[in-house]
Amino acid sequence: MAVFLKGASLLLVPSRRALAALPAVRLCSSGDQYKYIVVEKRGEKNNVGFIQLNRPKALNALCDGLMVEVGCALDAFEADGDVGAIVITGSDRAFAAGADIKEMQNRTFQECYSGNFLSHWNRVSTVKKPVIAAVNGFALGGGCELAMMCDIIYAGEKAQFGQPEILLGTIPGAGGTQRLTRAVGKSLAMEMVLTGDRIDAQQAKQSGLASKVYPVDQLVSEAVKCGEKIAANSKLISAMAKEAVNGAFELSLAEGNRLEKRLFHSTFATEDRKEGMTAFVEKRKASFKDQ
Ligand code: CAA
Image (cartoon, rainbow, N blue to C red; front, side, top):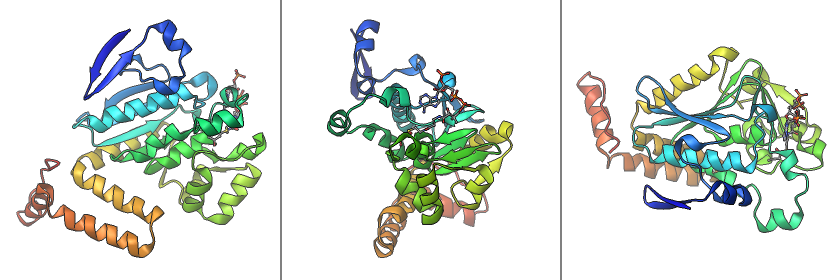
C-alpha cells in the first residue's frame, strides 16, 4: 500500500486487488487515475475546471465509483487557486441516465438506511465555486438531480430531463422532488415525478430548469465560456454571491435578505470590492486578487 500526501490530508492508495474488494465510497483516485470521468482544466487561462462523465456504455449511469470520483475532482478544483468555475458534462447521447440501476437492484432497506445511501452525492451541492452543468442527451433520475445540484444548467437542443424513478417502483433520492419543484413549480414537477414523463430542452428553458439552450456541438464550449466569464471575477466574491442566491432556497425572505445584507457588508472587508469600485471610477478593468 502506497501512502501519498494530498494537500493536508493523508491518502492511502491500496493495491489493485485490495481496491477491488473495497466499497468505492471510501476511495479517491488521484489525477490521471480516474476510471469513470475525464478531468481537465479548460478556457484560455486554464481557469475552468472540467469534469466529463465517461461511462458511455452505461449512458453515464452514476455508479458509486463515478460519484466518488466526481467528489474527488471537485475537492481538487476547490483547492486549486487558479480555478474560478467548474463545468460538469457527459456525452452527446447522455449527461447521465440516472443512478446505476444494476448496482442498486439488490440493495436492502437496511443497507440504504444505515449507510445513508447516496448521501455522498451532496458534495456537488456544497462546492463553493460556481458549477455549470452542460447537459446533452438524457438527464434522467439521478442525472437530472446531478444537473440540478449544479448552479447553472445549459442544455443542448436534444437534451431530455426526467425523473422516471416511479417506473422502477421508487422515488427520486438525490434531491429531485425538492430541487425540481423549486425550479419548475409544483404542477410540472408532480407530473414528471408521478408519470416519469420527460421534458425537452425548450421546455426545460421555458420552465426555468435550464437557463440557455445551444446546438449540441456548441454546448460544451458555451458552458466553458460562461465558466471563463465567472472565473474572471473575484473568486471570493463569487462564493459570497453563490451563498446568497442559495439562501433563497433554504431561508425565509426575511432571513434570506438578512444573509444577503451581511454578505454584502462583508464584501466591504475585501480588497476586491475596493479594487472593483476603484477600477470603475478610474475607467479601467478591475484586477481581482481573490482577497
Ligand atoms: N443504470 C444502469 N445501467 C443503465 C442505466 C442506469 N440508470 N441507464 C442505461 N443503462 C444501460 C443499459 O442497461 C444498457 O446497458 P446494456 O447494453 O448492458 O444492456 C445501456 O446503458 C444502454 O441503455 P439502453 O439499451 O436502455 O439504451 P436506450 O437508448 O434504449 O434507452 C434510456 C436509453 C431511455 C436512457 C434507458 O436506458 C433508460 O430508461 N435508462 C434508465 C433511466 C432511469 O430509470 N433512471 C433513473 C434511475 S434511478 C435513480 O436515478 C434514483 C435516484 O434518484 C438517484
